[in-house]
Image 1 (cartoon, one colour):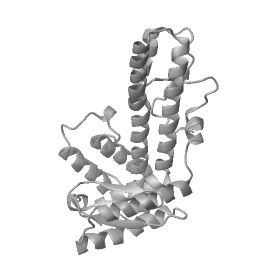
Image 2 (cartoon, one colour):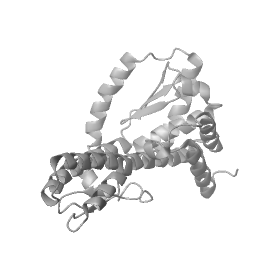
Image 3 (cartoon, one colour):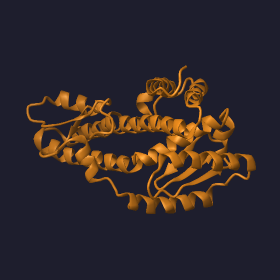
Image 4 (cartoon, helix red, strand yellow):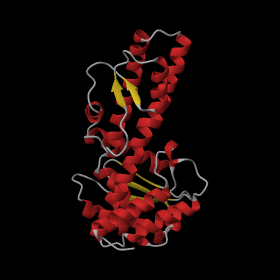
Length: 274
């Protein structure tokens, strides 16, 4: 099953009978992925290239050790205490088998957080200072834990690998099917790469972020946090990020959209009323 069928899925089609103009337009828009005969549905191709949890955890352990060695860890006792109090509450309700949770506050003004497969969570001091309360910190931690629960890192690698191979293989197919000069073929393949990024990979990433937001709201509710504060956090983010880049070129949904979707989800689940 695809990660999110609300995101328009690109079509893997035969080029036979297609006008060159329509091929180029479809590749650029990301609505067309050229592939070989026998290519199947969106999940089947990506899942074939999705690494196992054991493989990712091993790689993540190396990356986590390097991050802690290269990035200063905060010495703020209050910030660290908050992280060690909130993080385990969220992780406990998520109940992810074999996860080895570790929550670290990094001494950076950046308003961000990240998670590595296996349960290693990095939270920047700038985001702790930005949050109004523990509930908003819990919203971010719930989101990060949601990424682990949904295996987003593994699924993203599978999607990126499959898409890259389809574009490369499609280039060979296109060159043998549609007669065009090498220079034009190179231009078309550049359009295919851009189209795959905009039409496949970026929407896939945004759908993962949205899914993690909703999982995070579930964990907040189960752990006894005020789920309404997840909406307040993204409203605050939206107010600060006015004039930012366009959503269709981003790996993350627009903060205003995230606030709206969280609010609708929370009300639909009966967690709270606004």
